[in-house]
Length: 83
View 1 (tube, rainbow, N blue to C red):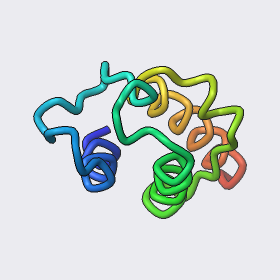
View 2 (cartoon, rainbow, N blue to C red):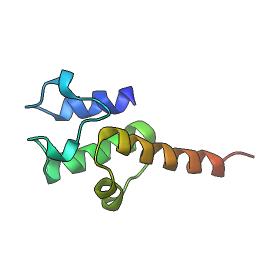
View 3 (cartoon, helix red, strand yellow):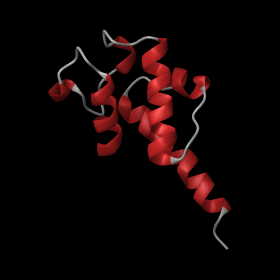
C-alpha cells in the first residue's frame, strides 16, 4: 500500500503528499483526469505487475479500494504459478 501511495503522490502536483492516504477519494482530487488515470494504471502495472482495467478504476473510490483490487489480482496471478 505504501508504494501505491508513493507512486500516486508523484503524480499529484497540486495535492500535498500528507493529504494522501488509503481513505483518499482519488476521483475527487483536483488532478483527477484521463492523464492521471492512465498514469496511475501504468504505475500499478510497473510496480505490481497487475493490469487493471477502466472498469476496475471505476469500481474503486479510494486508494484503499484500489489497493484491494490490486491484491485480488495479485493473489489470483500468484495462485496460477504455484506448482
